[in-house]
Image 1: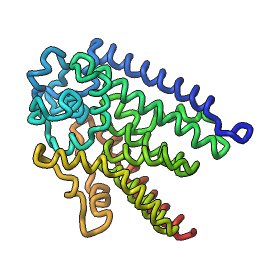
Image 2: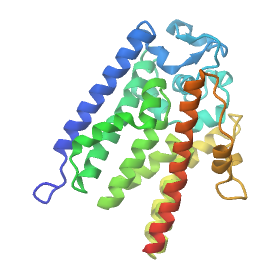
Image 3: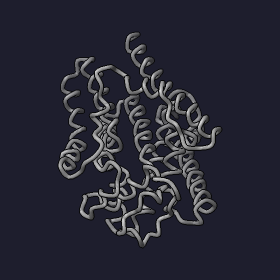
Length: 308
């Protein structure tokens, strides 16, 4: 806060510095790892041949692998309304298309013109990084910390994987930071927009809406809870559009009778990574830390709620 007003200039400057560093990071990775071919960031596997419709892009292919998630969101950006049958090149079309926010915005920014889709996708990803760093700078500023600490958002796992492999994790993480900021500042209009965007980034974004509405009900603010529940309508409408048009993985399979069964099962049965022993060990350790952090945050949330 400066003179009783929110400090926006310093977080804006810090976020700009952070996004420049992120772009330099990507440019160096593309130059040295992919010979200047920016499609290398989508991590497309040679074992899962890319669509012939995108042959003109000369997509960089990783040999002897099925690639990574970014390649499928790349296809979604080129065919957001399922008009060109690119869904047949995806592992789980329903899941990939449900996460429409980043690829959909890229398609809008490129005005549907194929040759502009890829730079637009990179730009949208960086835009969400900028927003997340800006919101983080403002949020920590509320608690007396310098906004420059927000530059460390570069090192967040969601940032690293999304800058390196163009996944959609960064968008949801940034939106989560915006959610925390606008709940703290009690900015209902901006909060409503955040809640509308979250489930379009990833299906877990619905949890933000559920949590906020439950909190409002707890405070006996029924009208406000009902109003903010309508923020889920755009995502639900998109899911309705996808119904019958896509197939594959259904997120309802994550739901189990036993609470947190999936999380604890993953902790007890680590993934076996096809990599060098040291790399596989590091990946497993980081996985366990991430899962433990998620479990701890849930426990902490209920503990705080109980104290109140």
